[in-house]
Image (cartoon, rainbow, N blue to C red; front, top):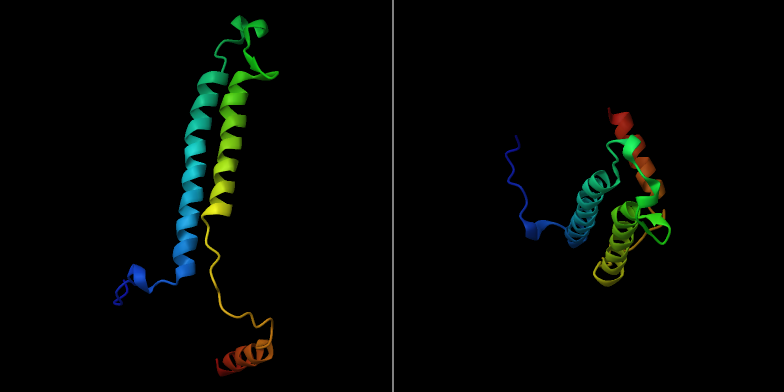
Amino acid sequence: MSAEPSPSRGEYHPAYIHGRREAIFILVVWVSALCWVVPYCYFSGFVPNLENFDPEKLETVWGVPAWVFWGIAVPWVAANLITIVFCFGFMKDDDLGEAHEGADLAEEIAEMHAQREAR
């Protein structure tokens, strides 16, 4: 266990806080879709006794079995729409500082070699 106190929320970089919040939102959307899709498809699409199954009584929406439409297609489209609106409307573009594009690369390589030789 570390003797150092954990950093408070104010000490984290804003890019980390925004990224964490955005990841949690996307995860909540995914888990919500999962909690709808799995039980709905199980209870609506599972045929316990194939001997009594009548294909003529199978409900369809636009030619697709209703359980596939409501259990897979609709949640998939809804999750994508929610995610797109969130990404284009609410995600923050954080300033990560100036990109050096390899300007310090030679210096970093020299430091790595010096550290290896010091060991």
